Length: 178
Image (cartoon, rainbow, N blue to C red):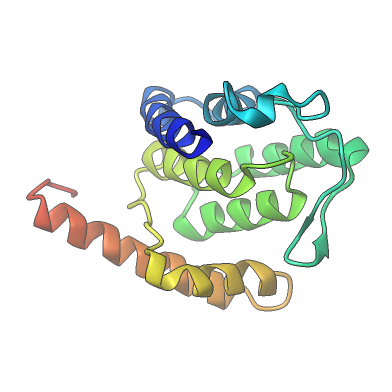
């Protein structure tokens, strides 16, 4: 049942992203995206699971430690301050924000989905073609994230390929995208 709920919630989160696309990115927007995705799920019944708020327990992703719960708020504030102070945001900046967000891993669960929704919002906000990561290319995406600290090109190339995928989808649907 959670899979069905989270799928419906994801569509609502996309609607929210469109509604706030013109707004500057804030912690409130990010936390609300998490809330939209995870409310009414089994996770929301767990006392330690903070729906719409930062994690209370340490977590690991891909065998790598993430930022400790006590440090998440500081890291998120710093990340947002650095990002929002940029004058001209390009796709590479959005990808860098996404990777840094995933390294912080601020929520107990749902970080990847929230991170990709943030990327969509920021692409719309900065008039950048969004990127879509196809199932067949998820391994490249995960490799790009895991190698980000040492080699940024893997993730950047995967997301640029994802922009091409988005444009192809728009062409198939005959939706103008210029």
